[in-house]
Length: 305
Image 1 (cartoon, rainbow, N blue to C red):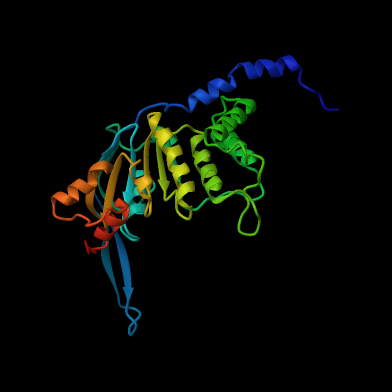
Image 2: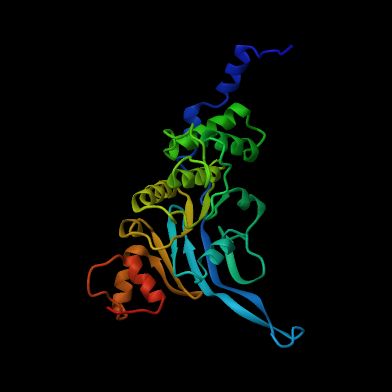
């Protein structure tokens, strides 16, 4: 025979932390993190086998990153631009502490190397959303909260954390809809991406990495995603993302921009100053255009202006 908990016990559990207190947690970061990377060089080995003699093979090294340097402060959002194969995802993976192999240079977080405490304060959103299609948005975030949040919190408190993330990311209207997939109709692409961001936001990360969070989305949906990330950065978080050909509205929301071309950094600095910089060295468009289109043309070695 099942026994029910007295209502007084449930009330005492809920009194330990209120919903308003949970929502206030996500308004600002737990700690401020200054990300600094200096002269990053990454090499990989490429095996070349001959067609005539299979036994003879040559090992060549290829440089993916060629001396990339930069600093991102709390409250700033860094966007890494560049054509395909320029090393954006490799650099993002290295900064997130997930890259192995021959990586030389120095990466520090508040002046210290990557550690387990820093890993617990870091969120990483991959380009491909790995979600269960048959679960609803609420179920996905509640199950994630039950698995990732510390055992010092009760199940009710973890569920309230999930609800707070749903509210903050604007997922209230679709919280009871299933995620869906290629063979199952579910939430939209932008909502699915926000669910992926919400899974990382549950731990309230001080440092957040995102690999092309706007890929495959229309300009309006991409604007909502970046606006959400801008609000998160406003709370004192350090946000680093790779992005492919953003609109001009999105471009001017980035505090800093890093332009890569075949692993070489062409520009690192404020997004609002990038056009003036290239104009000062003789590269200026003849007509008004999207800055990201202009920068990608330069990174590809094409200049027709």
